[in-house]
Amino acid sequence: MVHLSTRQLRAFLLVAHHRNFARAAEALFITPSGLSLVIRELETQLGFRLFDRTTRHVALTEQGAALLPVVRRTLDEMDSAIADLGVSTREASRTLSVGAPPLIAANILPHVIHEFRAQHRSLEIRLVDANLTTIQQMVEAGDLDMGLGAFFGPSPGTRRTALFRFSLAVIRADLNETARRATTTWSALRGETLVALNAASPLQRLIEKQLARVPGLHRGPVLNSLDTQIAMVEAGEGIAVIPSYGLPACRNRRVAMSRLINPVVDLDFSQIRARGRELSDDAGAFTTFLKAHMARWAGRSGVL
Image (tube, rainbow, N blue to C red; front, side, top):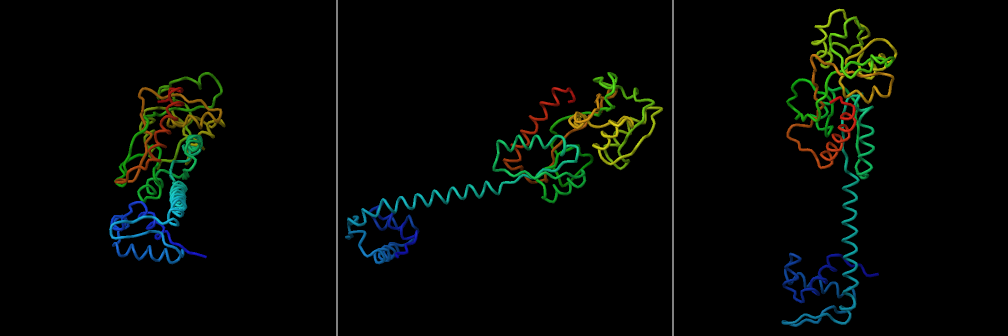
């Protein structure tokens, strides 16, 4: 069995193409004498001459002319296969890691990810549900490509980009038309029982600044997650003040949302990434898709 190297075959192909050893050697980045040695080795292995050579002329022999299309086809097929495998490998390794707090991770992102991946089947998306502090730390460390949510306070290691501006809203058990009003004033919360987040929550601290001006407010359960707040409100344990981007979670329960006014308290829904790190094309495309998806339901519902 004859064992030929791709180096030998490419050398043969280039000499056949240029009909000149010097130009072929230049294309291979070797000396003409080195190229002559490669061709002689190839001819020895094959058992026949490939070229008739003089000092002025290089021509294919009958056997060389017969071999030329076979070598050209073989190398073309090999180059094409290697290129295809390279693309497949790169696509198989494409991943996007996204972090978000549980409310967003459970009620907004699953549908976004499912629809986005229908258009980007080779992309693996890893979703991490964690609290905002953990998400910030993972983004800074490079363990997440991006974080999504309402982030409070400075974060020197991340760059923050606001995607939407939501506001605070009150939610009530959906028992009557009063619960379904489009807007509610803060003063109208007087006498209600509040289901709140714990005092360490930056979101709850923002809410408490407004509640300080609401007299006669009764204090109910204190919880650690927005999803649990919504469930307790549905059960009739009181009302809760949450960001309006929680609307998809409320729709999964018998809970009505009403935008709080006088004053309106805005809250940015943002994306964070590690400072000094640019978003990949996949991350940029996902962000654009997320914005369009959220704009559809938020705009229709009037929660922006």
